[in-house]
Length: 488
Image (cartoon, rainbow, N blue to C red; front, side, top):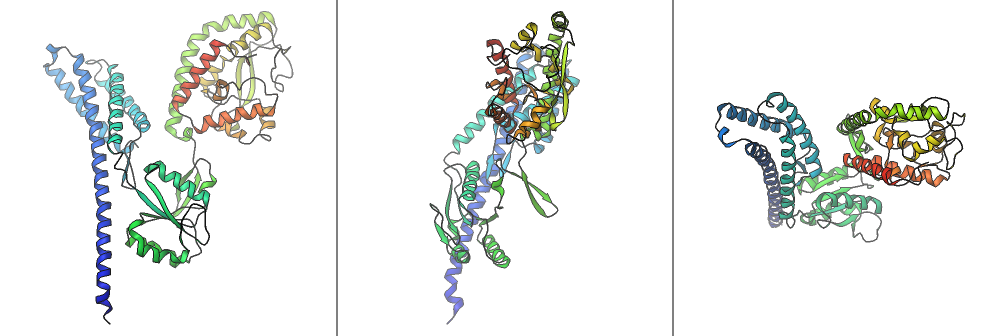
C-alpha cells in the first residue's frame, strides 16, 4: 500500500490550516502596526496643532509676515519635533503586547508628556522667551492632553468589537494558578476575549475541562491545533525530551508555548523578572516609589511645597517661641529621635507643647495629659506644633505625605506585634499621611488602632501616585480647618 498517496490529503489539509492560521496572525499584526502608526501620527499632529495654533492666536495679524518671527517659528518647529522624535523611543506611551495588542494608557501619556513639556520649557525659555511668552506652554500641555485623551477613547470605542479572542489550554496547575493566569490575560485582552478550553493533568479540577493526561498532549495538539492559540505550561511529569517535542510541535502549529513559573503567585503584588546570566530570576514587584522618576517627582514636590510653607510661616516662629517660653521653661523646639527612611533614626522637629519631662521618649500624649501646657494644647489642637517638620522635609528627612514617624521605642514594640509594620519605613515618613486623613491619628491604646494605621500606610506605599499625595494634602488642610477630635 502506498502510504505517501494516502497521507497526501491529510498533509495538504495541514498545510492549508497552517497557511490560514499564519495569515490570521499576519493580518492581526498588520492591523496592530496600522493602529500604532495612527496613534503616533495623531499625537504628533495634535502636538503641532496645539502648539502652533495657540501661538498664532497670540500673534497680532500685522506681525504674521514678519521675517524674524517666521524664522523663529521655523526653528521652534524643528526643535519641538526633533525632541519629540528623540524622546518617544525612550518612553512607554506606545506599548505593544506580543505584537498583537496596542496598549495606550492615558496615565503613561500624562507623565511622559509632562516630562517632555518640562524639557521643552527649559529650552524654550533659553532661546525663545524674548519673542514669545513662555506661559502659553502650560495651555498647550492641557490642550494636547485633552485632545489626545479624546483620540484614545475614540480609538477604544471603534475597536471594541474587533478584539482579539485568545483561546488557550494549560498543562498542570491548580485552581490558584489558573485564577492568576485568567486574571492576567483578562487585564491585557479584556474580560470577554479569553477562554480556557481545558487542562492536561493527571487529576481533575472543578469547572475546568480535562483534555487528557500529560501523555495525551502531543496527539491532542495535532488534532485540535486550530482551536488553540496558547499553551501555558505549569508542570508535568514528562521528560525533558517530551517537553521539547511539545515545544517544537507548538512552533510548527503556530501555537505560543509559554512557561508559567510555579511560585509566581506567592507574591501578592506580582513579580518582576530579571535576567541573571541565562537564568530568569523572579523578584517581588517593587512599589511605585522605587522608580527613580517617581522619587524625583515626589522630592521636587516636597522641596517646592516646604519652601513655600517655610517662607510663609517663618515670620510666625518668633511669636510662637515667645508664647512657649513665657509659659514654661525649656527649649522652644522639641527634637525627638524617631524611626525614619529604611529604619534610620532622625531628629523630628516640633514646637515644644509639654513641660520638660523624662518620659517624652516613652509615652504617647493622651487626652487631658497633665504634661501638656495651655499654649501646647492650642498648638496641638491646630496642628501648629507640626509646622517645624517642614524643616525636616526641606532637609530630606521627611516628606509632606507619608507614614507618620513613630518613636523608636514604639518601633521596637510594634514591629514584633504587627505584620508588615516595618514596610512603613520603605518610604520617607510624612507630616501627614493616608492613615491620618482617614481618622487614624492620636494615641494607640489598643493594638488594633496601630494595626489600622499600618494597614492604611501600606496601602499608600503600594498605590502611591502624585495625585494620591495631592489628595492627602487637600484632606489634611480640610481636616485642620474643620477640626479633628483626636488632635490633642
